[in-house]
Image (tube, rainbow, N blue to C red; front, top):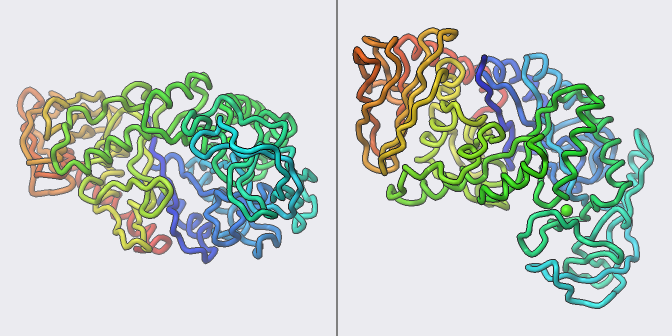
Length: 501
Ligand code: CA
């Protein structure tokens, strides 16, 4: 069976020129040929920020770049028709689309309402810090540009638990509406982390839950998307998405591969969410991201034996999506924790060649982040091609040295000449004796990241592999190296016109 591999197809600072969906359509065959099995597309609906909205400031879920709202018909990424063509192009190439679903908040209301509310403390939302007051809240969404097409539902303050702006008093605070309580099974950060921003949807309100199901059926029918990426899970009633996914899967008859964003470095928070949801989805391994982040900022003194300690991929690999960075962790963003350039090949070699978890490659690492002048990670396409062509068979780990650690894959008979040996070091380089597979005896293995390094496999199937200081080495069989280079070069050539550096 082919290895699974996900592409996060966007970063925060992409141009707002409206050409993105067309670029995805053009690059779709290349996404498929390098071995991506899923492509995560950015939120497609109209945001409060119009063409400048990355997609998380949701205004109208039913406006996928079709109506003149927020100063524009198209979104940052293009029009509805262009979006549907991009989705179809990806899926016609045998790759699933992961649609980004953003339910926690709505922004950019059309009208204000006078609402009775109280204020809760920012750092402890269980603590009320004001008496009852009347605020002027931006909570009424009538969507005048859409005029009820597809759905007449009007959102008002009864759909929300609270907001953070009183227009009359020109005051910013956390306002909780009269008769509303923050959803109780959410993250306990700040006491209760139901409220994040904008108008916070009340997931205990039946008409809200029904409306989100109705929208989901419409959206999945229209787009044909076969997967979802769910935003901001820790701010939404924990039991909501199990119910929503069950409804969507029953309605569409599709598997609907689902990945959730639960942003917490504590693996216990992640496993708790999975338990509550009976493992009906996977989660991004934020715990592993922060292990990478700590290791990369320890000046070579991180104990690499502990790299996978308390990570989701270690304790719940079937539900773990491994990744290095994303649109929130990049410089100047909300969850900034960007992995420095020297460590990127190490992190990607580890997640891409491993048998554990499903890796997700970030656009900003693959194609660069122009605004921040961050270049693409060198030879990332080779590491991806190595996953698709060579990273098969059982995994043997060598995580027993404080600097130099690695693993091997034994290869599989369905993939001739497959098998890899991965060695990384955060400090001085070194050499490790590692077992690949007896069937490989006498074969030459070459490091795809530095072809000057090669190893002849011993009679017993082992080899003495070397890695330079502060870097990664990924050894593959010599003929396989040629295949990997060909596949990587074709990918770079195929995507360059659409995502130039
Ligand atoms: Ca919430």
